[in-house]
Image 1 (spheres, helix red, strand yellow):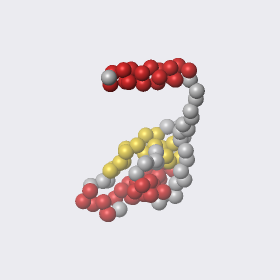
Image 2 (tube, rainbow, N blue to C red):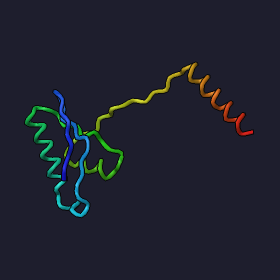
Image 3 (cartoon, rainbow, N blue to C red):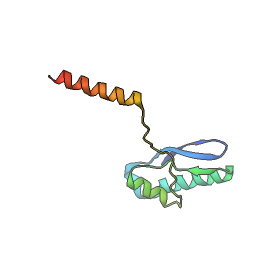
Image 4 (tube, rainbow, N blue to C red):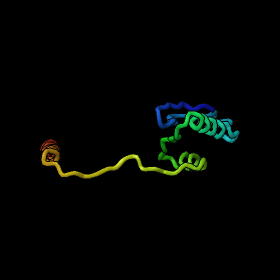
Length: 98
């Protein structure tokens, strides 16, 4: 198993990791993650798992006691320029279908 980590002044970030599929149940990935968390602690950093949209991966990360933190916000903003662009694209699509 292995993990690619990046550090800054405040955090250690887990970017990517993996393990041999034949040895998935060996605990090697859990040991690798634990070693990464210990490394962050020794550096005085927090550890950022960087999250996952895959339920099995998210469940694996949560088993280490982390807490989910929202990292992005999506907002809708009115934009006259965007509305005009969307209307033009729709008009072009309709015209080219004929």
